[in-house]
Length: 410
Image (cartoon, rainbow, N blue to C red; front, side):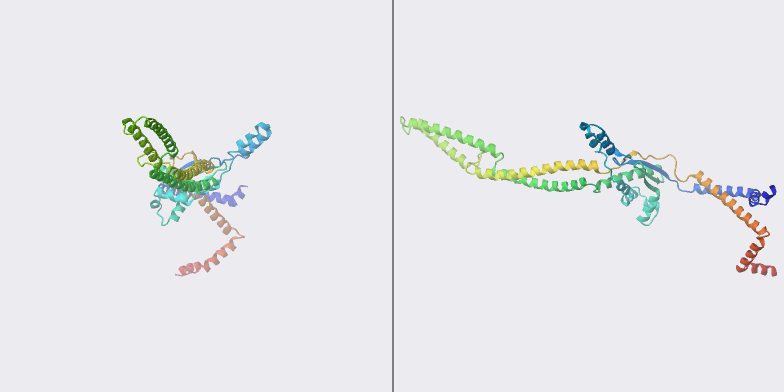
């Protein structure tokens, strides 16, 4: 049994390993020393990661809508509305859109410019810089619907800052991308509101111009007060004329009392004619021009109120669309923020030394196995002459044998 093991390939291989154990140890020691020195010269990198979530993007296997429908079906008719209440927040957002924005060229370019990475990368073009940065940054989506954003940088603080920049710039890009009908409607409503505001300002300017030209600040109130004033003047005029008619039979027209009453009657008549025709010094407009002024004023008021109603309606609709957009538009929320890590991510010097030492040990054992197997083939009586002949023929074809003969002849 021992003789068979000694003459087998395994026995010869183990014996060769034992004979060359010192050389193997020296080789592994040299490789370990060289790999450790090489690891010390590598540039160090630190990694930072953040876990983010898109509100409403996580759905269970059944979803809130399915649970709500099931609950509504099991309850009585008076409580079936619970199904629709639970289905309100069960809309599935476009997770692929958020992932594409997180890994987009626009976001990565802004991060590169923000952190001034071009001189550090030493690349000629932006495309090369993006490929280099893609090796350091990664975005992954977990089965539960969470986004994990990771970045490697030359310092701990830069790694955490780059992760935060990616999330911030992605949210800014998402706020400008048209992703829903509410956002399209909101943009259209903003344009309509701007036009309605300009139209309202034009109508207000026309009303201001009308008031400056006519002096009618409040036409209805001013017209009522003008009629009251004319009624008062007319009453006083009638009383004065009645008094004048009464004293005309007993007094001479040259009498003092008669003249005083006559002057009062004349003054009241001139005042009524002035108020009716419109006095430039009077606050109240004239009655003869009042109908045309009121007609023009009513047209201006109708135009102004119509435009004001349209403006208010669009303003209210815009606020509603903003709320709807905020509810439907995807945003990235941070669950676990990126913080500077204590340990570096690269290089792991211990792992590097162990890896290269293990590779050196494996290659040395493999080389010994190849040498042992080759010697076994050459020393075997059945296969040795064949392989020696093959080696001799190969050597002659490669001019190795001739050189050897010429060197022997000399």
